[in-house]
Length: 169
Image: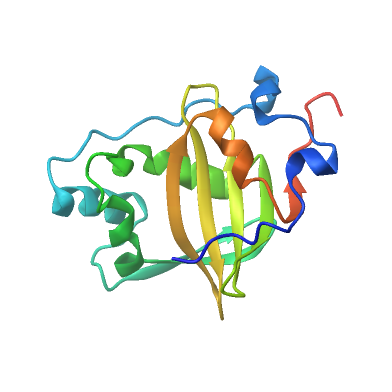
């Protein structure tokens, strides 16, 4: 698995605030959690259902306002729920909300010369969200993971493509 290029600019080098210091009006309401699935197949079915896919071979295209169209392919979702101890299917609504209304979007370079968008989701809950969109021939949902705000800063690197404006601006 390729890692992000460590030489690209980071949030603090660009003079941005720590994600932990966001005011409540900069955070979205919790979009709700799914129940934890009992096994891999059930977890995968949760993702298919929420992304409106009937089968693993199906795909859909969503409009991500600030980067254009994003392909979501059923077969590409499998690895998201393979690590059953994380039960990532519970946070699928956070991922979908983050694609539709991110706090920030970063375009990051990777050591293998690929680029990926890092969608940062900021919520009024302990759980925050990172959604990774791979930039290949098409833009494809690659991964998503929930994390705490203090760990989200490390994903804020590369070129800042978008940042949601403060409610008072």
